[in-house]
Length: 406
Image 1 (cartoon, helix red, strand yellow):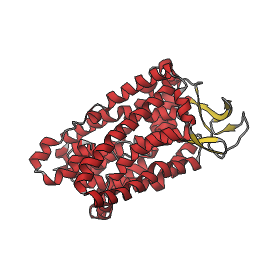
Image 2 (cartoon, rainbow, N blue to C red):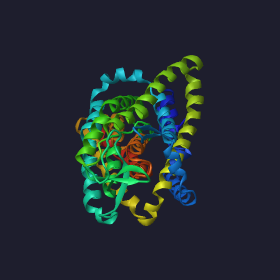
Image 3 (cartoon, rainbow, N blue to C red):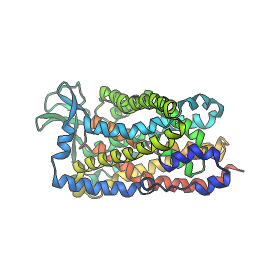
Image 4 (spheres, one colour):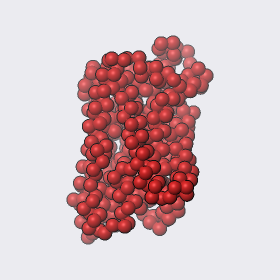
């Protein structure tokens, strides 16, 4: 089990002094997530050079609809094991008690679903579509999957893309910056439900409230993720694969959520709470880490040539993601102060909006646009900057704690 999650569950049995001293992140994976992602970039690029057909062959193992690949089975398996541990650790019975502390919960829901998706759209469009467009390559193009169920002739125009034939398969050729833009949109509509437990814990926030908000966001994603994703992709003149969006929600949110809910209840009943927390989740964490790293290596094995040809690609994507993260945190944290929330509630309320659910974003980008797409790469960049940026925000919270005690 990750340190943050285990400590959250055990925190109620510790004194205040003990909690203050123990609130550090010692898990090698969590502390050095940026390093692991960096190594995956290098490993993926090398793999792409040594075995250029491997990722393609793996991605071709897919569920097809009308002859078009829809769900990559290897990626689906990896991403299920990235999502399942997040869902299985949540006690959804806590959601019923959320009404006792409505202000931070409502603030979180408004920031995550009424503000964040649209600020991400605006910030990403400004930087990727205008300021950095020349650096990315105004004429650079990317090949993405055709929305399944859509059968257009080669040469037809769909949104900002043109139907082309690539290796015998119809695909859409879209401007590269729009593909990166799509990845940013998918990150913007996916509030974090995993690492935010660690960020809220390190900021000495209200851990129980964080769990409640994580559960609510997971349930809200079932309804709003596909709707907002389809709407914003459409406004951005990108393919709107409604069926794939709904399928993505079903596979990567609903399936692990249902599996987590029922397996949690059954395992706790059969083996007990202590075994579940200390043994079962500990095993799952190592599986999750492996699945995440394998997925990242596959993604970068496809995008290695793009990165080598334009080494600053990751920088161009990182800038709007960084600005968006800081902006949403500032809005959430500032609103929490105006609402006179306690610091313990304000910190996690701001953190959960600032961080992104990159597991779902990666899964959706791969399903909608393909493993080799710029959209998939953009979601991975979200992982790359997650830890350093969120640790910076944790420090800001701790240094401004007195604002909420006045």
